Image (cartoon, rainbow, N blue to C red; front, side, top):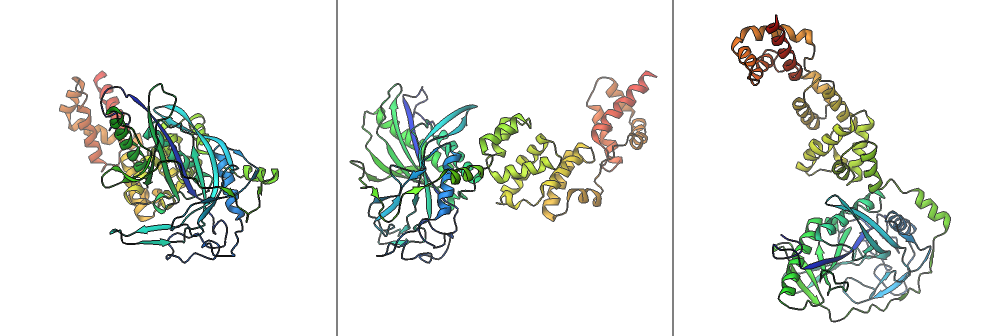
Length: 490
């Protein structure tokens, strides 16, 4: 599917995308009260007068939520507003019991940041307008027949940051890569678990099209209900196609909010907007302005970990990994930690990368497990890689050992020893067998001397059979060639 035009010719319109990413912060309690933030609790059990907005209840700010919000903003290169405040965003909806949301308007936690992504081998910098701290709303569940709506207020008051990008994204693919990059930064900083399936990472998109060369933006469409990275890209791709077709027919694109229908892979109208909604922001009178002093800011900055972009560069420059490997390995902090532990245990970096990205991830993905549940300890994978490097076992045998170790919990070296899988790489032990095979297969020897290089494969096969598959195939191949050459010269 084209991301720019319904035709196969050069695109007529430029895509302009901005994302609003909501990230639930990893706190034990809500932002303005002591209720738990545990996901999956029975409906309306993690609530109190404060988060239900009952008369006379007053909010008390959660210090940990502020710390996580500041870390997230710093990690995204934002300027931190050390004097900021909270505002009331007024609107009426069943999942908002107070009739307003406590958020930040003109003085957010962070502003003017950026995130770099790589598209087609080129680096792209996406600007970040702001990172602000706010409380989440409840969750509405609409009956399929439209007769009623149920509301669970457990999520009401869970601390959020909203990360608002500049309209710098130019394709659905870039949007997906940007969102994946945001998730990685949040996970590295331990700000959020970013589980989209649980709603702790959510995304709304604004998309418009304009003729190439035009500086003014086209009419934007807001997209909601995108619950995976793949669906974000799919929804935006469909919207590019839809809006392109409309503009080519001379139709005006009207401002509206649409949702992504996963079943049909299309966007569906939710509501139209004739003008921007007036939320009547004003400073929250129940909360004093927030002051973040230099000492607190310095402490939080010192706690920031090595971030994905820095780690990627280090893997390429210091470990010699290809950029692709570095990108995959740093996409998840747990994966990067596992890889680094394998290297620290003595494995070659490129071989460690191949095993982690290949066999380990395949094993975990096939079983729906995460790296945190990896059945093989990093030092054991390093030992297995070392056995291959020393020619104790072949690469094929190593994969068999890997599977056995993962399924049984037995370390690779014990598996190799108990199952007698070690290769014979001693020339003195192999030469008698090789000499016998050469003597018993004169036709294969003659064919090899006659220029048929494949004939040596038959001789190698006979040696492997005689040694019950334990001979080192590479060494056998070399020794056979040397013995035949020596015999033909004598």
